[in-house]
Length: 275
Image (cartoon, rainbow, N blue to C red):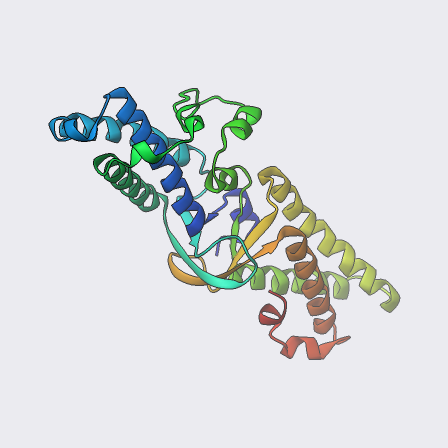
């Protein structure tokens, strides 16, 4: 198992189906307008420009999809959650980045061509769509990225929602608890000191999580059922603050349970109750 810290240092990004759909719709609108304007298209001259249209659309699609790909760091997997950002349980499709990017490219190209062939570019009124998309400066700074973000998908790519797996949480809670208890039993610790020692040890480890969340600028985290891997899973988004509080709470309770101070905790399914 990779472990929570590894997954935060090498985040599996979570995006949402609705955000992907929005990006495809807005970006294909813009591509249709750009190509129509560049080639001076009219409904009556589309048929004579099919090859040129397809070549120009493909070139622009490649540029826009590469911008999305270049902002995805970490392992070459991505989690696509159904719907939008909410805190309900939902299905998550985990797949390789290359598969996601290939599908994104195909969908964007299809939608741009469809809108051109059906004359939909004439219905798009937002002139702002014609500005800023083809910025080829790959060294754009944070302010430029903020300014150029036009969709929820692009915004999510700047504020990573990392993914962790159920088994990684279990390993952390139960493994750290055992280490803490072993240290306490091997030392000369009075009963009244035990809770404070447990709290300090947990805090030290969780501080490492917080540092990684701060680096990623993450407000949310995606909890995925089961073990690390690809395919369709059940997942749940939660605020980072809630995640930190919950993992602290269950680790503290589990450690005290191992010490015999709260043994009934060990029989509870803390994952389903807390996460």
